[in-house]
Length: 294
Image (tube, rainbow, N blue to C red; front, side, top):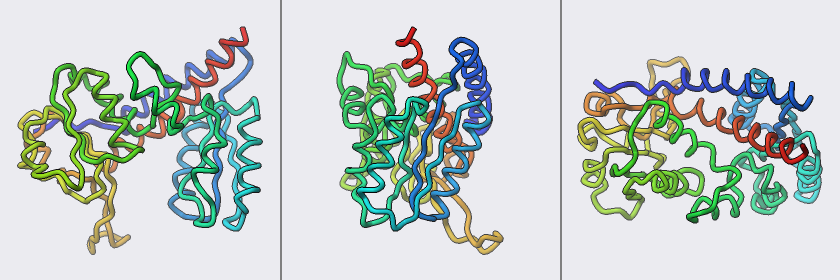
């Protein structure tokens, strides 16, 4: 039976660590980190994600600045608002909650977030520095960082191990593959054109599943003792639930836990950790600002 990698418990520990660091920063400088979030429209999922971020920020003492706009806002108006937050010295981390309404060019809006305040780690310069040896990005994408943090906190060795990443998105797959490579793993990325991904996974010491297909990775894909990090979150019909559905990952958890050495559940695995990494990167940004000022 696999060790369950508990994202909720680990996130609670990290929030306590961040709370202490924020208090120390405030004592030393009289300042606290500020996280600015731009929310456009009234999508329930986006509102839920933003509410979670606000609650976590408040818990650790980070100032949460929410700017909410109607879905009808023009692209020009939204860009002006994002620029204002980017120029605000009390804001150290800035994110634009995606998706944006279809009439707005997401790329044009995200370009208004400066490199130093890129708390999501999506700026092309940050990604470029992640890809290059000898360079250190100011921030990295939060979900991949969450995956790496869980591996580290559960003492899962990466050096020299074979890692398979399922998915090649800019948000998770590609950056987590780079991070694993930096930790001296031998990395294979599987995607929609990959032949026989099951055979490739069976050779992996570490599997990171971020392919967006419910329970795609079966138990017999997992090498005995492998670590499995499940990034997926998918809703599947379930008449026994009041909501009529349940959440599952990209891994068939009940099968895989019988074979794996360690595995993240869904929910309660990578998800809570992603919010923590957003807060951590906001704090790191504030520390850079106030250290430079001294």
